[in-house]
Image 1 (cartoon, rainbow, N blue to C red):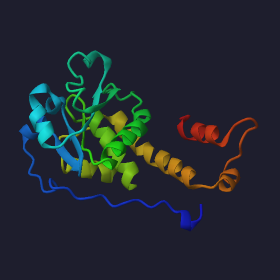
Image 2: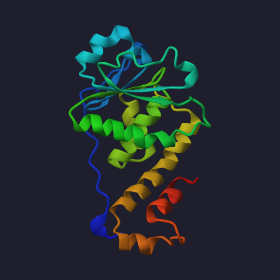
Image 3: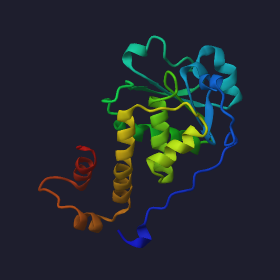
Image 4: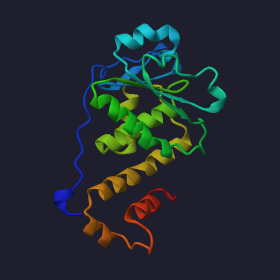
Length: 212
């Protein structure tokens, strides 16, 4: 890819909670990771917390759970907020990468319209934290360690499981490849990939990026 087509990323913005003094009870609350993007536990999205959600201006919620948690981790305000519900187990062998792109699109759609979004799982420590870290990585072009540090400075208790950490580390190459492909012209794509007969460029790129 030409230097003129080099991928440009925005800088990580600063939000009001950058100098947060962490205390143990705060793990039961949500914290603002970026302006308009919050991370927290399910307890921050329960029916008793409606006034707090409205006070913070929340308009969208990403609810992360697995099927056996659906009876107690659920959208409590479907008429007030727009939800994205993801069935993800907090298990090191769970494929969480496949949820990164849809989560990013949901968050981007919220922020681009002036909304605010809360991403929560059960404890707001592993699954939901991994999704937010991936969002920072792809949006701002930062490495896993830098994205993790940014989130942990604002929600100290995060601790993605080891399988999620490995996938986040692998994701850097995946999103860079996807963004590079989007920026390449058809001629550049033709030069870069040896396309099999009967396979479109889009199909080849998807196979190359996600058949791992």
